[in-house]
Length: 287
Image (cartoon, rainbow, N blue to C red; front, side, top):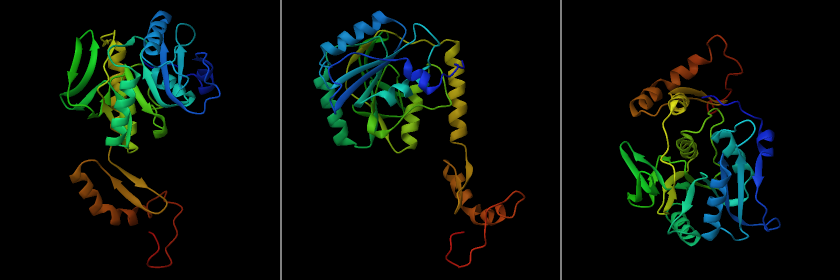
């Protein structure tokens, strides 16, 4: 499903910032941000988090209200929330998540452990894909109580969207050319990976009241996601101002590309439409 994309300024005007006493505080540790369509769920979620220690002056709460007006999708809405967030860590969560036995003290400890283990982490969550057929899960939801699958922290290639922690200094966001409410967890993990950052499932146990659903919009989002990232990772020739490089993920394709790089580089500058090239004056000039 394609969602009509509002302008960034229009989306920003839809962001609601909960009143707090931290306006003058220079260091916000946690931003809790959500896109909501049910005020009761939001209020209960906020009470749960505040009761678990996320009530200090170094916490802020933001949300986008989709109960009225043009619906804002996850990709553009969460990007706007990330831009607006002041926290060192931005918790992007569904309106129907609830704390259980773990609280802020536990999350502080898990993130400190993750930072010590891998300073290049950018994303953390409670469920995700490790590899084909293998998941890492630490959650209670309609699929089961107190699920614990894997050894934590588990490095993953995707994260479930119910609860994603973004390390804000990584400057990671969601794709501008995708829309909807599915696959944005996988999308931000791929954006992180291509920028040199890593994603993890951590041992932070919360409840998610929804089991998720696969409706017609899921299939559409899956197709859009597949097409976008298949095109992004397709082998290609990359022309820079000083070199022509063949890019490919397959080792055989990489080798083949390297073998033809030099001759094709010279040929490409003689093709119809070639422009901007001057003949090097010295042997060591970049060609």
